[in-house]
Amino acid sequence: MAKVDSCVLVADKRGAAWDALLYVPVVLLLGSYSAKSWYGGDQTLAYVLMFLASFIFLIGANRVLATRLMLLPASPKALELAKKSVTVTVKSGEKIELVKDLRYFPDYSGKSFGFVGMDLSGRKRQFVFHRGQFAKESDFKDMRSHLSVYK
Image (cartoon, rainbow, N blue to C red; front, side):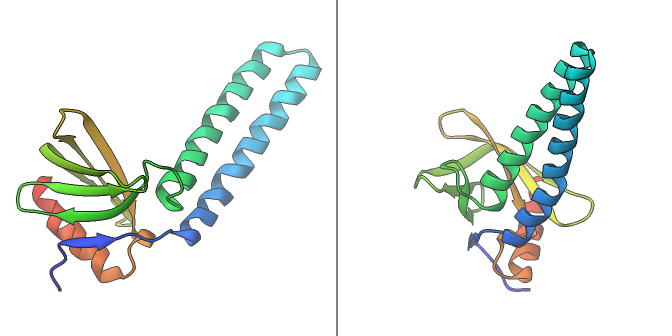
């Protein structure tokens, strides 16, 4: 495998479509059951269902806009590995260098990973990366193998 020290990320449109296929029907279903309960006389259940619909909508919107399509200012655009730190460049242009308490969290399916760490100002930061964000499959595998030392 080729050694990868830095990687520029791309938008994962295929993953965004799959996430939309997951979240949109769930939000619509919860919203319609909420409306049915509201007009059916069970307002308490309607409030709970609308809360769940709103909560899942926010989760889905964040996942699609921030991690898949990388449209939000805090979305990671580049990833650089050094010997004792990881630098993430976000869309707003800020470079966040994680230097302390780095932890790597792979998923069991091998399609994404996340890591958490403290930046230079002492603020805890966390990032999630998906396989579709890497231009080549080999870049994704290499990045996972390099980050596994922080497990």
